Image 1 (cartoon, one colour):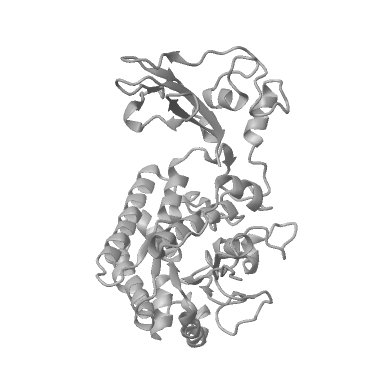
Image 2: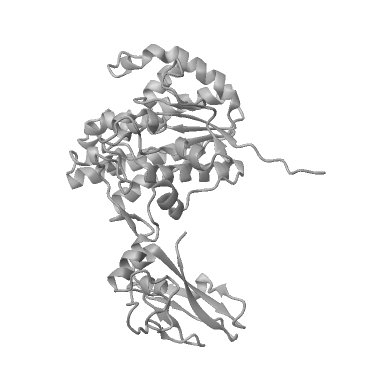
Length: 432
């Protein structure tokens, strides 16, 4: 008898700061005020352990505080996420060159034992993830904002400190795949944006940090032997700056934290550390980068999984609120109460009422003509509208992008292929 071997979870070793240390041991910001010893937000290593245990692991889990005798408290054996650590401090730890920085005095007493633990665990790793830099930017943000920073500050972060951290890992593990994360723009955090809120200076500081992250990408591309892959964590803070409101599948999230760490908040109650939803997006970026680098198939978190399984929210709530407002509480997405041939979920995406006859489509799918509709931008957050064509009303395929156009006002138009007879339909589906 033959049995298929079950693949072991991918072994990930992480080098980071409080964004990577398990939030279970960061109770000052991860626990609600009403239960200050029970964290109710999770970060990306915890999310992998809880929801992807068969696919990825950061090692055996020690749940008792003080389990490690180094700078870590407890948590995963291959997770070296240490609160307060900067790129500068990590370089000093690895090369045994601590400075007299007042902040470093708190952690440097255990540099040697932490470095030894890291050396002992590094051989277990199938991939190393380096996620650092937010603390460096936080410490210097006032100067960055006011253009008084050392002119070499950002360049040194990449070409001195990050490069030496990378070189240390590469020396001990010449062939291990390494993922280096870009640095989140801390100016997007409520803790910092609440103070540094002059629009022109915000824009110039954001441009500096964007250029800094581009220099990380350029630095990585310059490595000729087994270069690191880059996980674009900065894209998340770009979204926080630019998406108003910030939403997943039409479920709206509020940026500032709440004393109870409510699931619909982007940040924890301290206003600096991102909460579970945003950590899931970080996990997705890291997993996607690992998949590209290693050819693995780690399963990313869909928006619906984040909402329902990670946050305990109803991913269909935006639809349920909309259909109730129309006086049709509980009417299913595939129902057509007004009998206009358009199911409720399509009415939502089109912005047409589900309780009165609508004709949202214009034109025709005929030679020299086009078939058009105008979707509702808010409805499209929840559901997709896909034009499909068929020659026989049995087999359907999406209308190719070359025959699909979107006007400036959002109107979508599709045209048939030249010289062939076909039919068109618009399919509406709730987003995954």
